Image (cartoon, rainbow, N blue to C red):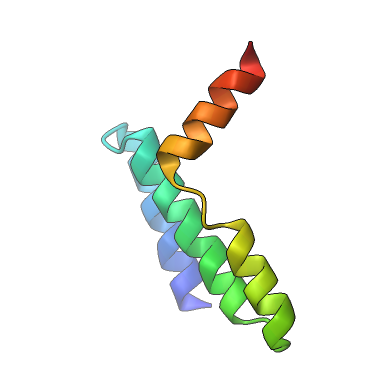
Length: 69
């Protein structure tokens, strides 16, 4: 629980201070999701969850930009 709180505090602080880039915020979100996946007891489901979040920021941004057009 404390890990999630610290991730949330970092994200909020970065957002409020506008010192973090979108890439840093994306990385923080990915780390949070990774932690969530690792807490899934079923190995198959955990692996499936982890495979969904293995998208680099550049690939994510490219897909996002393509979807906006």
